[in-house]
Length: 547
Image (tube, one colour):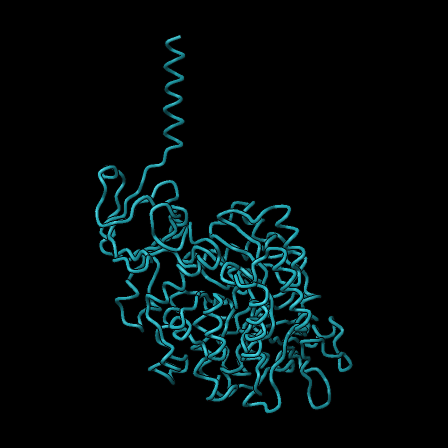
């Protein structure tokens, strides 16, 4: 009997030891908590995935716990990316990269080099080319046809609103001189009426509909590649979106990664707005997910991009008289989708770049909010070219500006050609939004732009365009401080995703999602911000990346 009691007690002690987790105390740090008005602290303690102490001393009850001296290193909450095409980014990492191309000849050369290692009929996808790098001439199928005779091609411009395809892809899709433009899309044609291989807007769907779906294992490889990059950059959570509906939804892929135990990064996944009924049914059946993977949002396009001239404006394009851009979806139909999605309790994230598109969305959100817009956490994705009245209205309503600052230093190289000097003062109006009391969040739009938050912070505080033509800042009055940019990447992003009670700041009781950086972004020169490295990254108290 005594022996049995001893063994039982021993087993109890063993089980308790396995279940208990010792706290870890990080000391001698520079801790930016993200809490407004609070001074930097020097100590952070975590236990069981939560923050249990933040301060300038080690409490008595933690004196004997594991201690890590950070030698003054900078500690902050992990970044949230407010707008990332996560799986498209993973697919891009596994495919051809046309970003470095700066001439038509190099475009052909890189395509030829990539194609020669492929099996016949294997698609060439992604790409992310930028015709502004070689003077603005749009690519043509003639550039790639001779070197891709056996492989269909669908490579997108960096904004995702234009694509170049080869003759084989056009043939497979049944596109010829007699194919009409789809609503909200353009099949670009030459002087003889023949398709050039360039597609815009909803015309992309003509090709997307025939591209074979990747296997589950291919998807998981792409997911892992995207996740590894995000974790190395200190991104703890993403708002994952996709541009187009498909048989295998973005949410299906994330659920598969979670089921296989691959998923470490937190994610909120939005469904294309045209599939709102599917999203509503999923919530009714499965709820809204958990702290790792949550869902219940829809994302839709009212217009396109400035680079593709598909952003929708009140006034004509300066470099294309008589042309105002276009809505990518019928406005009446789109308003119905917004109404139905809102009635189903789904969270609205609406892509709007041009001032007419922005005004359309703001007016509809005001109508749907019925005086309580702020409670809805409605988001306008990009919000790049609003009027001054739209900025004021955004702030008054409490609609969230979900912006990607890197676009400013990219588009700033050529935006004036598109919209003229009169509309420039409110382009990427970070400072004006904050001064009006608006809600500003930041992200990347990867793979349209680099995934790195440090590139985004650099862009927001310098606004120095990529061509080095604006060293003091493009529309310099819209520059913001490093701390304001950090807040947009952490605190406000958590609010936008309805998670501010659990994360976004380093406070007792919140999730232990934090990063240790090589340098304090507030203390280095602006030019050095983009060179900062993540030394360690913790999510839920678990070390997920170490430099």
